[in-house]
Length: 202
Length: 94
Image (cartoon, rainbow over all chains, first blue to last red):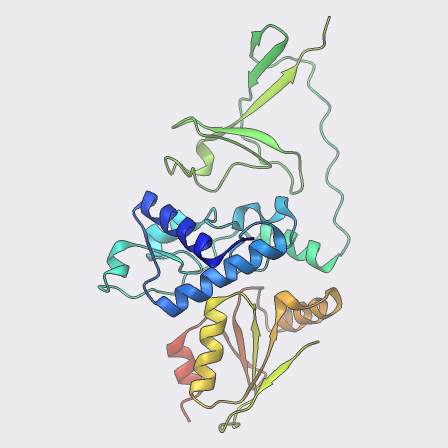
């Protein structure tokens, strides 16, 4: 079972690794940690306590704490959306936590709402047939690893893909690249897709 | 819909809060209203079933708002999104 202490320690250690602080208002912080704990218990992952989650991992992935938007929000506003993580100067009391505008893209918010309301989802466009032209493949025996040349954004609810950060090499398996690289903070545009093809056995 | 009413000595305004049960800013908003003795009603949107959520979405959209919480509706027309103490002070000045 997830305990409040565990949630607190995890957040503290994450804040330390990034040079952030946790909110210095003890009772507010406690409310946030309680919220994270509750979400972890009901969804299986600690989604942002201040956003509505669907319980579907693929739709909530970007708002699992620390969310995709934390780093740019802390950099710009001094705090993340829910104000769990704050910048040192805010923690020191020299600046106040300002309201943070929602950075989560509207299409993600709408997709979550569609799931919550159970309305019909627009059928996704049929996937393109596999190209006959083999991409620049780096052949390695039975496996062929090809680096896709573009980072075309997949449809919502699309297939999971491998993405790598061209700046630091961080690799992630999800529908689309993260908003920002969690390692080197490169922007989404610096991610490229890695396509892997498993060659048929001869 | 599970709408809860919090009684207060100041009932000059009709105040409705859309909140999330896990949201610390929403909690802060409720506490602000309680501390000021302002009577209000609220619904925790994350605890709503599909049918209620449909209604909430309709009501929020009518105000031209998205699903960012808390949303405080004062007298059916003024709306404040997020815990904005300055705006709340202004709305309940009288």
